[in-house]
Length: 311
Image (cartoon, rainbow, N blue to C red; front, side, top):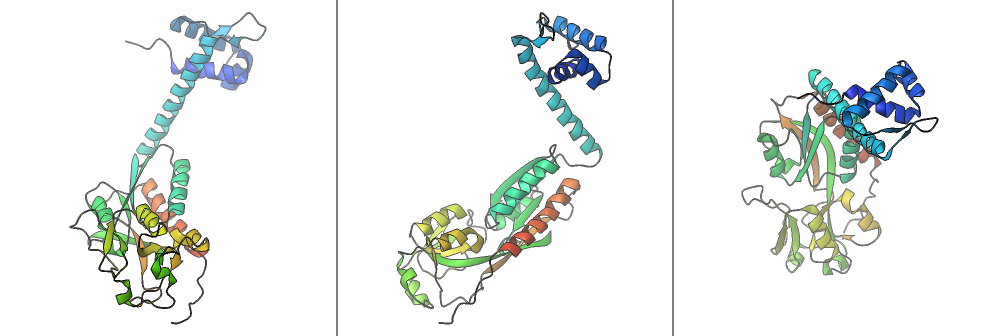
């Protein structure tokens, strides 16, 4: 069964509505006015509704015509998207990119990456997932993600690796927490009565809990929950410096200094990873390059830290 109207007729309808008259639309479409008028008359006949009120000097869309115009615009937009997708696929452009990032990755460059991607590749689907530690690499290995951003603890053998960013982890507590009132280095024994909130794998078979000093721990599987609990004064723990800059400035959190750790000891180097056999087209190569560029810029913008006095 053939369609009662053509894409050409729908585009003519849009042109007339945008140009304001049949003659102006004809000039835009590089046709004679009679061809545009005939196209509109045929479309009205095939749809069985009056699209134009011709009782005025310049034809105006009827109420039915305005409804049909909105539908025509949607159809033509979808057709244009399909054409761009087909052209991209024919030229080697991927249909989709799947990215899995560790929760420690800064949100600002990730959001900017997605905004730029939407403008650069409007026909390519982008899927973004956030995981913790080895779960990122697991998704890349089994093909659920084609690109991953992972911390050193989550790396697995056999993946191609590209350095992205340094993430400095800082030990913090809420100002009202007992540890926040201690000056200088805090002996490990003094941490025994305080809960340490630890970011952990969801699966017990994953990477073991890291940087644990307190015998009492709360294991949390996502970074926002850990951050909220620390701000609420429920314990102490490490958080990425980029996440807590505002908290430190507003005194919602304060830095504490466990004696067991040196300054800057917990600096993690995030890397982009992918399988060596992953088919990388233009969109994947662009994402990898943008990740490196945005991370380098974000690192350069980070405020430089003054040296702390000893003791």
